[in-house]
Image 1 (cartoon, helix red, strand yellow):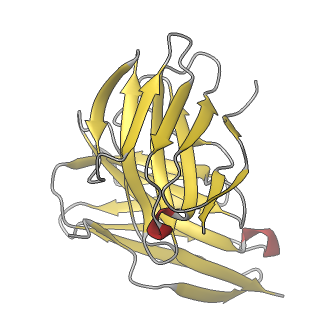
Image 2: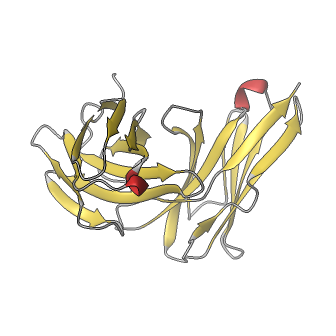
Length: 114
Length: 112
């Protein structure tokens, strides 16, 4: 069974631009979560989707948004990029959700903001 | 507020010996705990998990211990192998919260 895939793997943007990252979960998984990893900050939870509905959201500004499609694929968008948004963005999927099932991670998208 | 803490940023262990990674948490609502391993430029890989109704779970060389009264979690790797060198994250989830809270990670280095 194919794992979680994320595209693109690397992205370079400039301040003020916006970016869209994509995530395809493991087949049959309906829950998709997004995390931001920065040096010294560990993994910070962004949001979680299940059946196209956002069930939980982390403590990030409104510039960070996401959505999930009927096939469980998910996208996250960051508008008006800031230098501090440079990070590894990780997507994870699970059958029903991270409270009950193991989450499996994709390889991540490395975003660099110049 | 760091609800999950890994107080050792790094740990060095000799090949063949036991590696013990520790994790403390503050939220008594956490009832599901996991350990992930991460290599550079890759996403975290799931290692082992434990529910709060248990105090120990084993999978091959990996054993996780949970001490609920101390709010303490540990991962034992025995014997340690060079391929175990990576960053290890502990994570916790509360029932219904639908999110994982991660620790800062511990970099484990296995020396030959």
